[in-house]
Image (cartoon, rainbow, N blue to C red; front, top):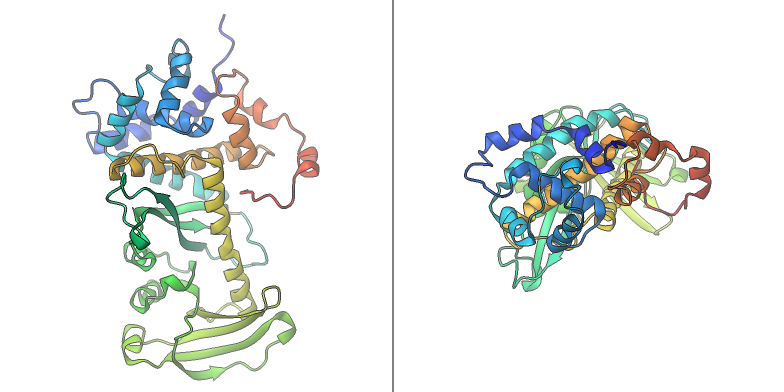
Length: 390
């Protein structure tokens, strides 16, 4: 007797197949494919991410144990781990990247009204940073990092309103962080937060010309002339200076000919003087400091991804396999965020991932599964030191 759909099938139903099939057609991804098409590969890798499985062999073993139920889960058939591995090597990673970008466009607006701590502005606020995944240079010969070690970098532009990635770029470890600025499209009136690794005056001037703003830590070697200084600041807030400057070094001045703003802020907790560089003259000096403080949300995002999804141990060695793996991980995060919003669940995204991971073969309706807990009880039991998204 039919008693409902499996939880995993309900998840697949929410995201549908139309948009993914459009991505497959765009790159003719299923041409000459006999055993495992792109959609079924995505479904099996998504299963692996939700279940927290460490390898393709583990995915294959788990699905084989339930091979008589796979059709009802939304997976066409069980395949051996070697078939999964070959598909990872040969299917075009751009299909999965395009679908990930579709999910970004779907999910990011849902969290557009989220607030940012200590910030009361309407601008879009993004954080640009990268995280490194250490790999064996003997197996990942293309992924060269520092000091003759292997590394894969995931460059991320994170929307602070909801902690949803807006842009993802996957490269080897030697790809310099500031090069990511060359492939970004900047939104007018948006604010981009970044650390000192992104100080490239030519790229920063492109942000300025696009009508956008940036906030970054200034390098110790920065040379400038003070054009104007605001002496009316409250030092009890931590502010030490608010200056309008012009770059003094000829090369830097040529690359960025406009005026800039330097703000000095003393961090009492770490006993450190922080110097910020920005082209935004509209917000207050204290808001600039608070904006940069929120840059650490990207570190929380990276930590969440590495702790709750399978990314530290990659499922393939080639460039194509690594990009498919990481894009499926990003898609998993976006799907969890989409489910949280759609189901109006009081659970955190971490708790949703744990519940789904333990219930993939359950037949409880998704809304009941994610809304049975009392919200006040969740808050009472929540560890305040735990790093959570949403």
